[in-house]
Length: 231
Image (cartoon, rainbow, N blue to C red):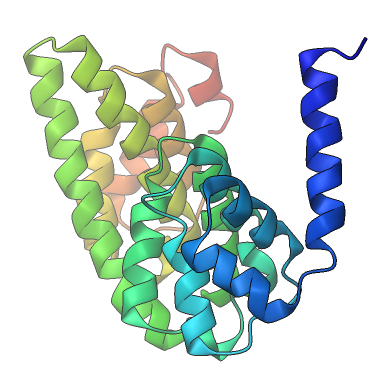
């Protein structure tokens, strides 16, 4: 007798076999209007994106869909994102939302994909200021929640701040050093060590600011090993 897990794997295998016979147009249609299972498998089966319309349909599944759909789309994003069809402010806004997904796998995959277009000025000039503003907004919420000892809210916002800082690490060279300094002067003292760890990771980049160099020196003596090891 098959276990529940084995049944699920068998069903997924059968579904994949069916979708292998679907045309490109059928896969795009299911990605736009299908069930969660259809969207997930369509995302995994696609082998190309042929237009700006198809790119919008694909990217739109990064938000507002079942977690398995978002994860499947984020997993494939890096393969397609360099195509010119993805270069639009509408898509950039969705990418920013996806960086803060509740599923860390989605956050990680999206940030990795965005690194593929980091040298496209049209993208970085639009995306980086918005990432900076969002990071500052979430940082302020974390600081306020820490003062209020609001545990659940702290954890929820800390998760978002963690991934904002991970994205900042990848794009800080496109940001004014003053903006980076403003953020790190505050994140260096956040109670949650993972935020200080991300702060330390960003400081492994080259900076000239005496204030940032001082933060780097301070974090060498941080109480948590995972922070100190990066310094």
